[in-house]
Image (cartoon, rainbow, N blue to C red):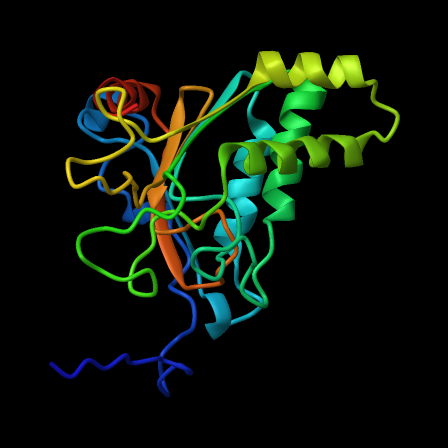
Length: 241
């Protein structure tokens, strides 16, 4: 069958670029009465316009801020962290680079504040179903060692004089990476490696993000939700993490 892709390159006339500002009077309960809050969970929507509007990437700033505010642990379940590559290689597609801002924030969390960082990644080169690598690739080809080395580089950029013994100790104690597995296996019965499309991270076991935004650079329009509630975060950790 014929397939077409439609790209929106500009906003229609008469349409505001941004939604209206949040107004407290829109809240459906009185914040002074705790009983009215039952069943309500505080959430913040986070999005970006990507190449539609180069000056509007607020969710990038929000994710960086969340990493910078972590005090105990950052847990991530990610499709990948390294840039999109030519399938079967570790050659990044032109324009795609490692996300230096996020790597720096993770490095600072480990080095400055002793935060633990746990990252679960897709197995490199995981392809869902019977699709081709150019149709869907849930793992850009980077290994856990590749991702760890980039985080370590970010720490060394923070302090060029950091001692090797100190750096090794921090990495051993605070940085943990692994591939997605089920039943201790990283392959399905079809012998294809397991991948995931997740863009999910948890900060200090008290708030979490779930949405469409990958941490690797691809500059798409994205949208997601930050759930700022320790009870809901605990539930997600029990059921998912």
